[in-house]
Length: 335
Ligand SMILES: Cc1cc2nc3c(=O)[nH]c(=O)nc-3n(C[C@H](O)[C@H](O)[C@H](O)COP(=O)(O)O)c2cc1C
Image (cartoon, rainbow, N blue to C red; front, side, top):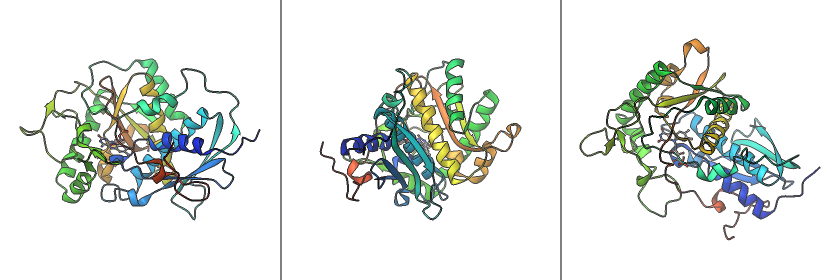
């Protein structure tokens, strides 16, 4: 049955959910426009909010927007609608990342406990040390299936592979810290002003690892030392990679959807996560992230999972900046 046109409140709910997605440096590189029939949304990449030195190909830009698309799909369920998504539907418009058609009513609401909508606002990056406690096999199984449903392979790594990936991450982190252009670009996303609506507030940054085992990103470029707060991280971090078979923009969007689905499901299970992206940002370390025994996969993202503090909320841009009304005006925030 065809659903009625979406109301302004429904568009607001959808854009708020989509805009809560994670993004590289909290750049929030997305724009949402109602479709002409007012029963769906076009999702656009916003290249003016890219991070071009760190992410010259727009891989992370697409991953971030893919995460926003996943949140839109989950929020559609909240409105009783069945989302039908076309990724990169028009070759002549490379910034049109997706069309999300919401013109069909959902056959049935998601059963309680399976609805990931509540996890959207609970999910945060947690850059703190995690407990030395394993993720149960049953939960890992659910995370693997969640990625698989998005056409992406999640590998929860064994010890030797964890060490290999962390070494590559540390190598990339050292390189980035020595690269003035990248460093100043990263620093430009740090925010001291409390009213900031994007970027990374200083107070969400975690400590560096006292034993340098877990190479969390030093957004300031400072290595561990007397001036930098350090703590002991978990002895053997639980690290997972998300890989795609090919390495095209559509794969990056899929990887973003898989990342967010896995992250929301992990959140619903009380798990925390943060991204270790440094090795993905250099072509040679990205290539070496692959597990050669697994065939020619392309690693798109490295996630650290575990039990620990939930992580603080980061700011988001007002809805009026990311959503236009059906007639193309900025949507109001007053509600
Ligand atoms: C593609 C991508 C790469 C990211 N890389 C890192 C990273 O290397 N280190 C880190 O601490 N967070 C990383 N993040 C997390 C973002 O900084 C975070 O999502 C953003 O600041 C918003 O905060 P939130 O996740 O708490 O909502 C990454 C996120 C994405 C989507």
